[in-house]
Length: 322
Image 1: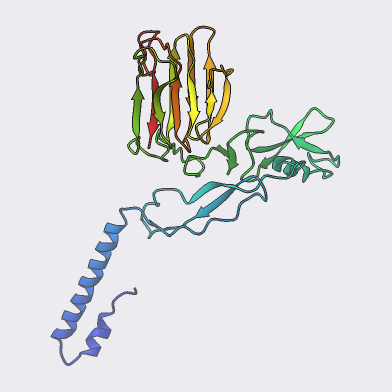
Image 2: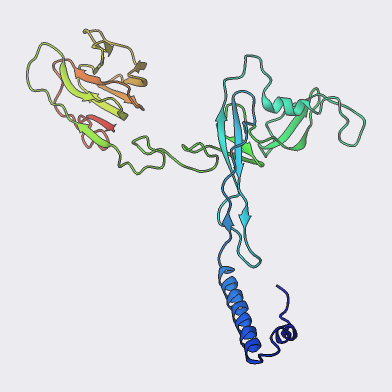
């Protein structure tokens, strides 16, 4: 807004000397009020625009990175917006075909046959993983003992072979359970991302031999959706696990199964057995069906929760169930 010009106001109402002064004072008051309001808002941060849509995946197959951004709108004197202007997430496409050239190898190969290092010599380049920064495009000259850094790798490049982290803006980041890179979000024991273990129940069962019986004892039913299953047992007999279809997964029909990993109810059950009388069952879950835990007759007394056994002979079963 330009400066007020009193002479123009007086001219517009020259026949009424009081009204121009009142009008001028009113304009001055409104201008001061506007400046005061702007001064108060300038003490806080600016405001973000809405997020734009996620970009296409940086890779044509396998894992890649997608990004979205927003802008900070602020008046002169206002603080910058709080938060990040960019978010990155993992995107998973169908696996690359067998024999496909890895992403980092492709980036190094772009410099094949091109003069570098200030000379006209040319080299063939392959990735070099011994440099300090995992997210620099460090390439080894084939047939030579030196490598050269061509700057940063492209976003979405794996930090190292087989690693879960990917490079974004020169940093090696891992995805949280929300899929966002660098968020640090974790699943709770109920399987909820960022949860507080309050959407499921912790179930602990204790079994004690109640007397002679010719068949298998039912210890507990592990329900569908269970997670973080842990069973510990100590006796001269073995744990038995039956699937929801009535078929034994291990140690059924009076046959002893070897230690190992078994597939059951949509999860992997890891069965261990020490040279002594102790054996364990562990599974991450979630289970897609019920599982029945059993023990043949003659189980020794004294089983309880395995989180903090005080007596070496005491064991039990623990399950988180939704």
